[in-house]
Length: 347
Image 1: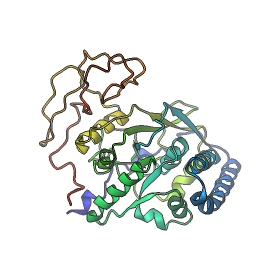
Image 2: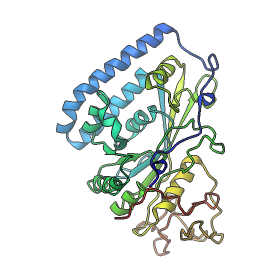
Image 3: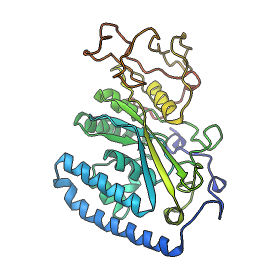
């Protein structure tokens, strides 16, 4: 199997980053103060390495959330959250722009992260990841993927939320129709864990903007061969950088759902790909993927059910007697190539 299937790439380059003077910055003194604050949060994180394993689940989640929010503030970044996460376990999937995405996700939902194996060896960060229950994947060993998916499913069955960046690489996040976007989109392998565990999938949309100008910002983007230190310095120097996390409607896959269709549905929610109108006949899927029947327009859905809900209507609802197909609708504009999966889950 080609290594390219396991090493996702994006078309972003230096041109995607803001030019010097293009975005507002803070003074060198302010930058130094922010750096001291970040170092302080990292030292606090060293103490968490010892504390987290002995804390009950609820307290551990609160501590991780507080640490992530404190570190985000120390960087001078403002966090905005739209929507509310389900209280039960869920597979959280998000687009990937920056290393800051990890802090943003943990600040919203202290989940177990799926991380590349190299993170485990990073000073302090690797210790924190392990203490927080991260699941590591070796992208150079394709045969190890089924075991990784099994561990994700096990964490979900145990009641833990799990967070994944299924694009597999970072990109600028502002040119979805250009060559910047990872060419293979959301990899479907991790979605099998949600299907196996019977857990919902919650797409998270992460975006960055400058509060001063109101424009989308690539200041936080971590691209190509850029070093972490250079990216960190750019964030420390920025003024009024805002990271927004939008929690979209949960997707409830059926036990026999196709992970590729589920991945495409989540990707369309994250990147706002227009969905095909409800009530039209399904378009045959590309690459031998079964077509999906959307929820009929005539089925009444009570106001208490959030927009985008798929699956059976709750028993307490007046519409409970009307069966709704437990499927995940996939927008017709997203094609699924015959060899899209790439990451085989075959035994």
